[in-house]
Length: 221
Image 1: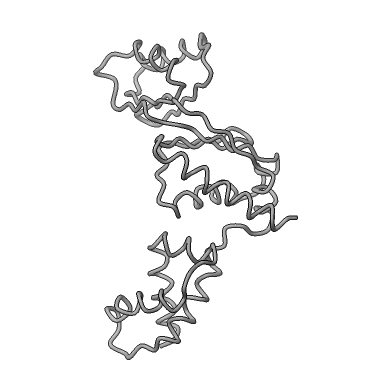
Image 2: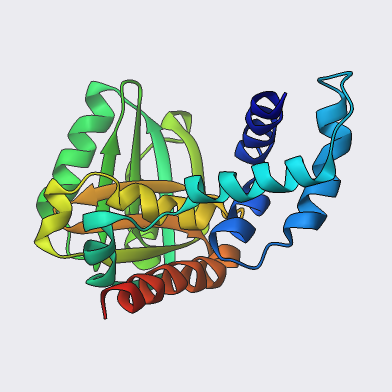
């Protein structure tokens, strides 16, 4: 019975990012969470449920949501953030013609920022807004699948150890997902993790990542 409750509690918390964030950041009220989960637990069992056993299960689940562990902590602690606003992206159909236009754009580009993400059927171009206005003119409307001019990027620069330390990039992503922040696009370039977000989310994202780095630095101090 106890094992069944623990598994159910674990599954319910796994599906709720807000609870994960509360547990990981130590501001969760275990009793309140347990009372909130009991009605959902009752949907999976006909056995009488004890509040104390649910509270115990919630406390055990907490250990599974610790982002900063082992070498990850050192890498995150050594990271710093840089924000670029006034960014834009365009997704175009991947054809020989569009790839040739992108190749020529890369060869002559003189703007501040340009990233190209190539998928199987789509190519996404991310650039500063001034450059974007010029780049967008080289593509015909029929090839353009999507575009957004209301974006910003957060560039996370980390120590060289990030290339050989599994879980570091996921730690950054988890910090954002727990705040319900959507990542528009993301890519890695050696020690830089680039995250593209809407302008509305960039301040929340910066705060979330700053909190994560501060926690890591506290642990390594």
